[in-house]
Image (cartoon, rainbow, N blue to C red; front, side):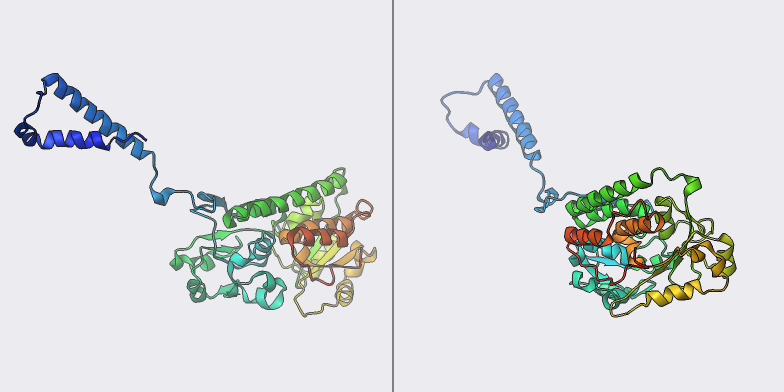
Length: 380
């Protein structure tokens, strides 16, 4: 850079201290043209010097040493949020989002989770900094306040009352539907940006799209008239997977007709008579398994088939009833659940797909261990 400071000092001295110049006995006198030239030179130096300085940004605007600039994410409600850098302290209040964060390698950025996550799942080992903040439906706001989170993540099914609880914290409250298969890629992408785990998100999405393409290529010939009717029961008796639920999304993606898709809520209660009347070709009951808890899949299936009137249903009379672990239908493991449904609904098309191999690949790619002892009964 050209050293303009001497010229500036000279100009200032000339303008402000003319008396000193006059007291000297110069060997020459400054003619008016010379004075004009000096003033012009002074102004050029000042302007050019200021211009050069303006190219150096203030320190607080420099790109962080991590290499990240401002980030913007969109949640499942299509709300947009901006952050100066990836978040470091997350309170996550639903299982599927927590599991997605773990797969992305962001488990250590989670500081608060529901009690059931720490006590009833095997996920605690991937959440070294997480503490109990109550349950997802009744979180302890005071405890969450103490954690100073950068962000709180809920499902979009959380009510306005629940969201209002966090308004006093002045913390962004985001919603992600990692339990809905069709929204999973978008959720993974945005959570990757939010946590600074873009590369891991890309790894998962590559795995996701490869598996999905393979499966979709196999069922592409199945038209609407060939789609099997399925009654998907979620957890408790006669709770169906209704319209826009996670189960409904996955069944639709697998070209199966969800008999409860026309019901108005995500998890409607139905009656035995309603199920018998719909006469589904398949009945699939999901069971949530917890650490240290043994579920007798044989008995669960036997009890289901012996319900009043169920012997008249095609699914029961033709042995197309199944009990599966719900953990494989939702969240990042939903891509395994997709293959699982393929083997149930279209056994001939998926006879060469082995769930154990798919699970092993998933574990290896994302450095996690799937501990569920049973995935489906009867085995397929």
